[in-house]
Image (cartoon, rainbow, N blue to C red; front, side, top):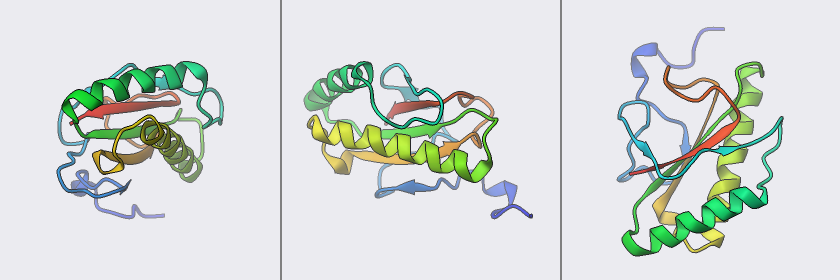
Length: 132
């Protein structure tokens, strides 16, 4: 099956949320806002350690109100469609927890890369929150 988009359009990011003011992690060198949130197997449920990290991040958000890009990744041994769907569900779960802890939804954008990301992207089941 041919690719959906030509390879020269690597700056296209499939994301949920407004794109105004958000930068793609594929075209820039964004810095993570906190340590990566690791997920086991095919899970997208948040654990206590995840919620603690997100709570601390939301406290930091209240002082300077930055924008965050919540990016989900999966391990490379999953089928491509399933990997993208799983990474999106993980990113959405993290986004929802951030909203519940006080971060405004307009300051969040999510994207699920699956295992199809930049060469320097993670190759495990994680969600990385980039500060923009």
